[in-house]
Length: 182
Length: 373
Image (tube, rainbow over all chains, first blue to last red):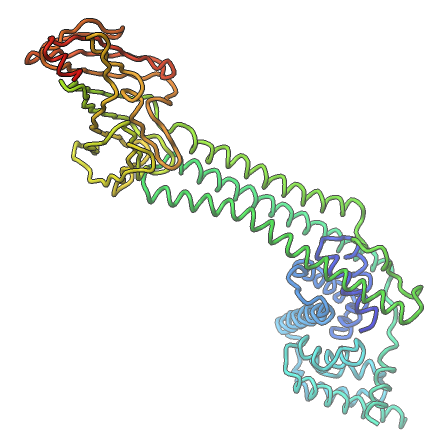
């Protein structure tokens, strides 16, 4: 276990004892990672700030119930992922009400992504992934969570995470390959 | 091959742009404020819970003192227990959780220290490890935690002391008010023995139900009659106690606070009469008026330990043909019934005065000689 993880656990324990200073430190250490994850999932920085704030409020309310302090990162990211899911569903409903919503199934999204990938960057390739695949890729590759932790964060079996990563990887590999070809 | 691909994917995805620092600081401040609000709310909730528990405890105690039914008293006792135990339990729960967290914190600090030793680069740790204690907590935060613990301890102590004073001390105080009525009838026989019939009627004011009483007669008990409020005779079991001439009377159904005690006991005594120069002296102190006591495990009360004043009516029937000579103060009247003098005493006095009564009489010469023989 690295010292950063131990430090996080120590901070969580101090927060559970009511230390505001430790909480400030914890927010300072984790908010950027949470924010980046939110941005990756919803592609809206302003909304991501709001979601991060909501996530921290949820963390404040539930921190005393967290028995395993080592699970704090996965727990925080799970809250964040759920909040992002809620936000996406809300946006989906809004667009539906406005009549602006086009039929965007996973296949059509990937197909669209495939057409765009020639001119786009890898980040745009990420955008072309389904939200679940995008979250799995971000958590596994960028946040360094294990398959089991990603499965816990996304509340799905490990097999599903592996499948999502596999499809996302294939898609992005093709995307990277095509970029290299160009 | 797979790992290379993963690393390449990771490397390309990593190049994120930084976020606005000022907004980040604002968010931290706002979150810390929210954290403080939550902490204060938790503290208020805890205090409120404590107050509710104390109210339940005292309410239960008051009900226990006022109710006179077994069910009601049991319910009150349960209420008291819930109130008291809840305050104790919340304190226990708090200290258990706090100890667990403190222990885990120390463990993590040790882990950090070992990590630092291994890396032999302790400067890399941005967080102070040495020193232990509440690293990261301000002085005032630590003080407030300690104060909270001390306040909880003091509150529990105060509750315990007040509770004991209010509810336990009365158990050891006299449980009855001054006698509403006590009667003593002594029938003096020609052979120098005195048959005493004592009756105590009073309202029971004890906290705990009265299931058994001890009657100390000073001599062998002949009969005990225990009457209920309506006059019916209650069944009971009398067992000889450890002390001489003390008997334990067990009742099948206990007597509750506010109920009437109506006890009549009959015994014979050979110690009340003395003869001096042909004159018989009846001494009415000692076993005569204080020899009968009623006590149970928590409360002991007898005519001799009364606080306040009491009214006592006594009649002494002298032997047939006895010539009454004198009596101490308190004689209200005397009359003859079948050639026997009946003396009537009635007085109200402080218990500790322990007024005795003394009667002198003479017997016809032949009877007196028989008595002395």
